[in-house]
Length: 292
Image (tube, rainbow, N blue to C red):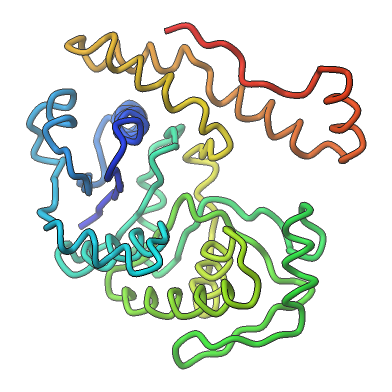
């Protein structure tokens, strides 16, 4: 069995993101290869748009479980690990977790076929730490040469250590024990240098340690840098509620989030002196006004 997993717990804006992603999935996959699992505290909000579908399930999670998954530190990555462990225990098969701020661009059937063969997936290889962006280089300078425990294995930060984006995580449910290794490793990395990217660094290090690790990026876009788009998407689903899903999807597509995503990334990767100059000239990148 194949399962496509979403975590949309909390703000309504996350539900709008998830709905857009799910509708885009059904658009590119006319014969859906997976059952969609939506981990949410508001399943009726999804049913109001998606209707009752046999291939969309809402796992029953208690309030106590949600709180336990968040842990004492209330870190989002702990919630993701809790959801993945729950899915692996209750829905055995090939698991593909996708962040809500994603848009499907190709049928993911080949991804699930490769997961079934033991391949693991993350969203995209962002390059090696040593030569990456400013933050990646800082992390490398702090952690280079150090070893960390990940279950029975030890991993080290080397000149060739890559950083994978964790907006997508795919693996077989039988490998769920690796999630505890990821958590252990992430805790050590956070303790060594407290930066938000440590969760994805830990995930990539552990999942890629003893299995091929491939990119899901050709299939799904992860617009992680456009948090300002969330309220706009929420307005789309609010304004056009009750309309057919084809209309909702068309309205969401009209926002052109992939184009805006690339424009912001291009600005983000400019040399710091150019960004400073553009700010001084009043030409820094800004989220465009989006009509809904």
